[in-house]
Length: 462
Image (cartoon, rainbow, N blue to C red; front, side, top):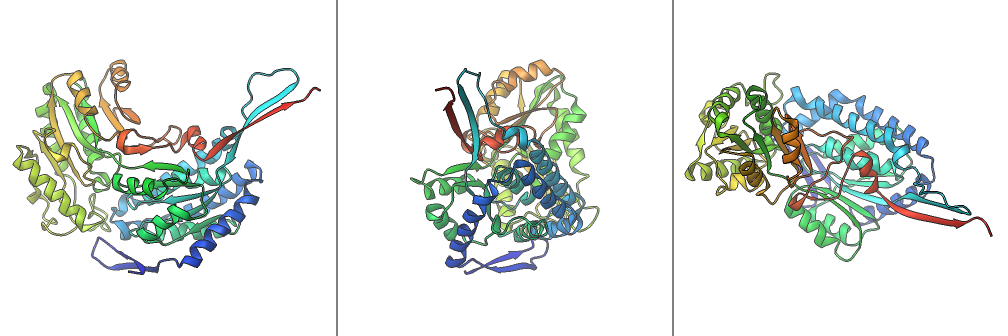
């Protein structure tokens, strides 16, 4: 296949057909990016900030259209779609606002007769390989900081959300970013692999599956590129005995089901203290009954289709395995008639009596499904939460902040939440451990991954 085909999961309609880039166009894009970066890096941070702000303004001006297109491409309910554009704006403006300070020279204690300082220099050309599940939010994590740090950017969008990249390119033109500074390429997996192995680039930021991350590392082997990998999760939540049950249920169910569970930091493993377990299951089932699985363009819809039919089939497989392994549905899938058992519309599933012998509790499902497991103590919960090859986020629900902090310090994860989940604060580092990947985006620390330190050691008195 020599072209990208994007079909809507809503009804299968063809949304976009785009030819993959030719070899000459790929080479020209990276050459233009290199040339543009030479001039861009010499511009003051304040000047970059002004242009990047215009870039963000141009995106936000199209919020309604962008939300419509997002729903069409990947099935997010329209009632929620604009929130992603708002999130794009919040993250972008925060990273612009902190850039001057984050990129400032670092000066150690003064020594007479010497001028010593560290300067953060841009890496060069940054290649971003973006996913489809949150295409605006995941792209902005690296895009705006990369530009603010003085890099050029080449973006490969997901085949499921190509219109996002086109809108970004349009916004860059309207903002009058320097020609070649930000470019979009439609690429096959094979072409992406070739670029990683030989194109004129300095860093790659990939968001996707563990298998995809392994493929990236194999492709760049021996090139000594900077590699940022944000891969996935099978994130846990723990409801302690002293938790506010109603608040915990509301937060955790939303964290498991929002975006049809297609979130790297969505909740998939739920551990509930035995004193609250029955109540949690009852209230969670009651809440799930209020979800509406339907065409995402309808205003009442809270759950749309999964982006891919294969994902829906995988959800059904994982649920069937869990039921065979002793779990039970808190709400039968028949409650959601839109789920015909074959298509992309899949009923949300909360499965009680889950255990770690199930793939549901061990592997990322990327669908609206979560397991609920009874625990008797903090120590048991901690052991189970850490019993995973992933480590992106973990949530604790408790009225005791000190106890939660003590647990959080022992959790193998990139972010610890208390009484909330499935959110991202751009002032904090977005990072993970174990098979969730490596590297960091957002916050002041995010700028460290998009620059390299250069030391200046001048003797000023001879």
